[in-house]
Length: 170
Length: 452
Image 1 (cartoon, each protein chain N blue to C red):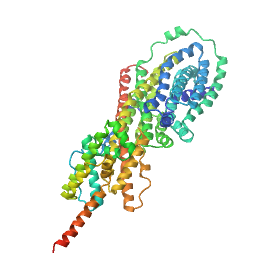
Image 2 (cartoon, each protein chain N blue to C red; image 1 turned 180 degrees about the horizontal axis):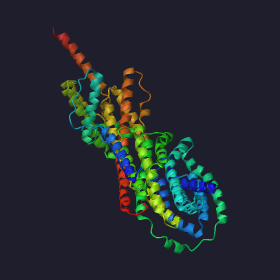
Image 3 (cartoon, chains in turn cyan, blue; image 1 turned 90 degrees about the vertical axis):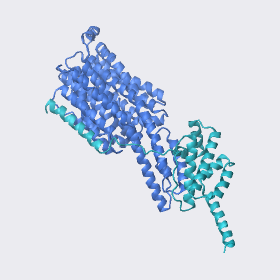
Image 4 (tube, helix red, strand yellow; image 1 turned 120 degrees about the horizontal axis):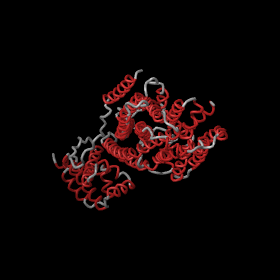
């Protein structure tokens, strides 16, 4: 192989491989973006208590994350365990009071979103807001993580109201 | 004579393999000795730095004390230091032992070059054999290191070298008895003239690119894609195989053409590694072949050029060793902070994307909360590393629908992490490709010189 042919062959082999990898999308990786928690996120049509509770949890996480200026995803991992919560608070320099305020804001947003989506009546939503404003932070977190009780109780109230109406109305 | 020639070539290969042999063991050392990625990189950097700094003094010592004496003494020091590396209880001891190992290694390698012409027939044949032994040692190092780490432990990499170095020292001891009294060295060194600047500058740049190639590929395989050392050793074997086969490519071409072609292949291979379309071993193979062939072409051409027609050989060999290993150190020092920062940032992005996928998945809410807790624990356990998430998904739910949703989520999350890890190395591979391309400048500037 002549000197020129050797250099040209090396250049062609290199350029061909780089072009092939570019054509196959080698430079196209972008991490999946995560949504700003302060932006409204529409509720999917809840089909039952489980789904309504799930939407409530996600809205609650959005509200608290927006208050803390972190992503919903960061907060979800942070609230998952006691140790992850402590680590998160330390890493982001968040005091207990700030975390408590954020969690309350999250619960409020979840109640608002549930009311707007028709998953909670105004009556139940108003009562819940009153209760949530007095809940200790651990119970507020528990409420965000598992809101099935809220919807079961709300459903129970509606069922009772329906029964009373059935008796009154002809 | 053949036995002496083989012993000298093996000694050179053994020492220069040490500049890369621990690459696959670094993750194990990093975990076992509980140090940071930056600290563990110094297991490589310290050896190469001391080798670069002591190569020239070692060559002068070979001329003044006698090359056979210095080769044998160097191998004995290398063996003792290798033993200390293998028994090191902490990172500090390991780093000190690595420095001593490099001093012994520099003595053995530089002095061996002075002995080789008498057993190789000519200075050119000696220079070629010496350059090839070094290139093959450096290329085989990671694979051998990975095998030993997986089959035995990282300590075995160093302990295995002890008997080899002792046997080599014993085999070469006969040369010491026949060695004449040393001559007037100071005048000789002054008369040796300046080193071949273009060839040595190109060697430094190419070595920076090569070090990055070896170090980054291995870290990507083990830390990014979480392969075992033995699987990573198998995966990176494409490079030394290509280097061995590539030694025959362009044999009739001149030094400058081989150096230029090698540098272009090296840059192309590294650029392709930066642009891999998928996080799979297959995608690394073609770039590795280019890097391997490039290594074979360029290292031997540049080393031959740096040594041709220059005497004493040990001094000019010392310059090439200093240039090569200074390049390795520069490459590692420049790229370690780049890929460490990129890896951390990509890991965070992938964690966010993965958690978003979990929250939006079709798992029931209580499973999501439970899984988020296990993922948080898993991320905590894995610390700075790219995590393996599979254990967080165990045990899988019994309900078929939930089980399928969990498996789908697990696959999606691990793929996201693999892609993120691959992307995290892109900038570093591109910088390394830049080092390789920069070597074209000294190669081109040497235009008109007969040897390059």
